[in-house]
Amino acid sequence: MTTAPSTTTDEAPQPAATPPRKSNWATLRPLILRLHFYAGVVVAPFLLVAALTGLLYAASFQAEKIVYDHELTVPVGDRKLPVSEQVAAARKAHPQGTVSAVRPSPEADATTRVMLSGVPGVDPDHTLAVFVDPYTAEVRGALEQYGSTGALPLRTWIDEFHRDLHLGETGRLYSEFAASWLWVIAGGGVVLWLSRRRALRKVRGTSGRRRTLGLHGSVGLWAAAGFVFLSATGLTWSTYAGANIDELRTALGHQTPTVTAAAALVVAALFGVQANRTQEQLNAERDRSREIAHVLAAPDARASTGRDARGRTIGVIASASAESAIVTLGGYGEPPDGRVRQLWLMRPDAQPRSLGLFEGDTPLVASGLDTSATSLAVTVEPDGGSPQPTTQPIVQLALEAVGFGE
Image (cartoon, rainbow, N blue to C red; front, side):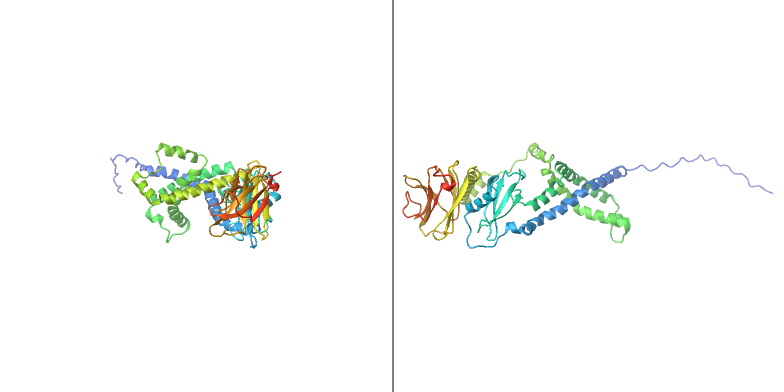
């Protein structure tokens, strides 16, 4: 029997292979993935609510017309009453608070809104809108109103839900947090999508979790730009970040662009006359609005109306303390060519004093009234007015009911 010769190996044992070193991306990817996931979990409810309430707010303007149809619309009548008479009806129904503004009926079938501020039980930042039929002075209802657009309770509720989820300061802080982290979600998602192999980005021909991830990445990539835009613009109105926008603009040296002197001269030469005319009209409207608001806000403001033999009306809201009155005419139409309607203050044992000329249906604000005045009269005078009446009054209204001549 033979035995195989034993063999020996003189080779030294090989060391264990060194594992490949992880790349920086392999270390960073889990962090970005976790940030993207957890920030998405926190922000997703905000995005859902903001999207839904934004759609509801866009539709709320039409919804208000349906929900508040009784308050907003009226049957069309023959002739609208003076605004002063409508305001008087609103004040009679709601004597509390002060008149802060009046929005006359903008259309034939729309009500007039009389806004009252300082009404007990109404939010100090809101007003009470009293809806008056412009044809009969019937008060058709009163609703709390918010903002310059005249948002009624339905739109106000949706707006506040969109803004702070009806959670007050907590809701505003959550909205700011969500807006601030939108760019983190969008940026992290784009980085994760770009880091995937091309084969893993495909959606067609895949199924299950891989298909879901592919759809998520494709949709998110297209939405990323919108998310970043919403985040950047949202910070301008946020509670804390928005407060620092002005400081940031100053630090960056941001200034309003200016035009050159030559360009300004060209613009002035082309549009100067029309611009000056428009500015004069704008200034006149602003002055008239201030005077009207001053009379309406007076604590002793009272309203009265009168009619002539043909049913045409004169209305007045006057304040003895402000020594002013707002006068309107209804149903008179335009005066004959070359003629104007002139308002006069009538006093016992004194000559009539001119208070101004009417311009179409625009209310005339008369100032400098003294408590001895007994009535207001309107006459038709030559174009430009007269120092003293040259015709008999077409309508006259006693002022005793509004606190004068007593």
